[in-house]
Image (tube, rainbow, N blue to C red; front, top):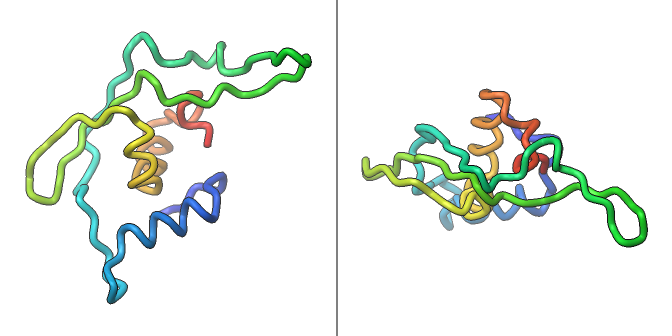
Length: 111
């Protein structure tokens, strides 16, 4: 499992704490990511940066428009939206999936 360099240490710690039981065993509700989709409301790469009222350029941080098809440990499959929910619960899995499919240049994954 590869950890994204841009992942904040506190996010990684939360991920580990949420997905480990009291004895330190890893447990997760998600088995794997099957696929993804993006609708027309997602921020496009050319619109990823905004200019503030003070004239500073900043990156637009949004996960709107993306959903992921996941398989759960019990075998059921679901579409998860908003992406922020899955990023909070499974940041490493999402990062691995995104990098493997060259989606990491999309504004929603610039984290």
